[in-house]
Length: 314
Image (cartoon, rainbow, N blue to C red; front, top):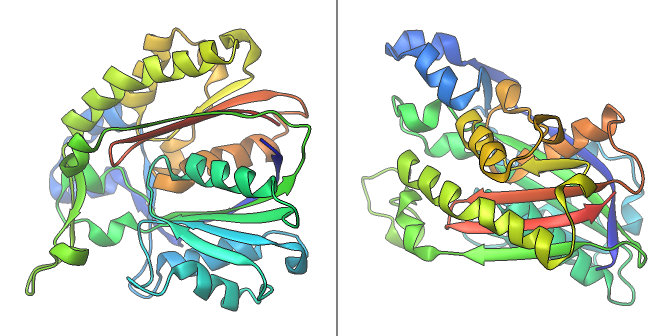
C-alpha cells in the first residue's frame, strides 16, 4: 500500500458518565460489571450534539493546510441524514476544496481499518496525496435507558486522521465478514425497518458477540501474521478495538501475547466504536511510545459481524 498516518486528533463530548454512580442509580452490581468491562467512565453527547458535530470538532484540532486535502472519508453509523452523505456536509463545513472526493462508509467497530485501507488505496492514484479520514459515532443516542449491557460500555466520540502518500511504507491488511450474526448487534426500528410510533433502539446480545470474537479473532490475527511472515516479537504494539476488559484479556490469553504489547484505554473512555483504535494510536503518539519504523497490528471487530486487521509501519 502507499500511505502513512501523519497526525491524529480526537474529540469527546463534555458529558462524562461515572459508571459507579450509574450502577448505584440503577441498582446494578458495579464490582461485577467492572470486572467484565473494565470501564469506569464513558462519554455521552447531549441532545443537540450529533456525530457530525463531534467529527467537525475533532477535525478542527488537526494542524494542517485544508487546501492540501484531496479526499475525505467519513466512517460512521450515526449519519446526519439518510441522504445526503454526511461527508458532503463535512466538506462544506470545513471549507475543503470542491474538487475532492468525499463519501461515507457505514461500518462500526472495524470501520477505522476499513477507512485506512480505502485511504491507502486512493493514495496509489495520481493526484491524491493527502486523505482526511474521520470516524465518529453516537451510539448512546440509540441506547434505551436501563439497558445494562449497552449503557455501561458504549461511549460517543470522534477521531480525525491525516494520511499522507508514502510509497515506501508497507502495510498488510486482512478482512472478514459473517452476516449471520447481524441481528446480535443492531439498531432496531431504523432506516427501511422504521415503524411509526417506535424509537430506533440499540440491541446487543453480549454473549453471542463475545463468542464470535473469541471463536474468530485469535485465528484471524494469527493468519495475518503468518501470511505475511511476521511474528509477535516484530510487533511493537497490538491495538485491538476497545470492546471491554474481558474481551481484550481473553484475546491476550488466546494469542499468548505479552501484556506490555497490548495498549488499552477503555477504562477511562469506554467503547467509542470506530474511533477506539485511532484514539489509542493518538495516545501512543503523544506519549512517544512509538517511533518511526515500529510495526503495529491494529484489529477491529464486532457489529456486522465484521473483522478487519492491518500491520502498519509507523
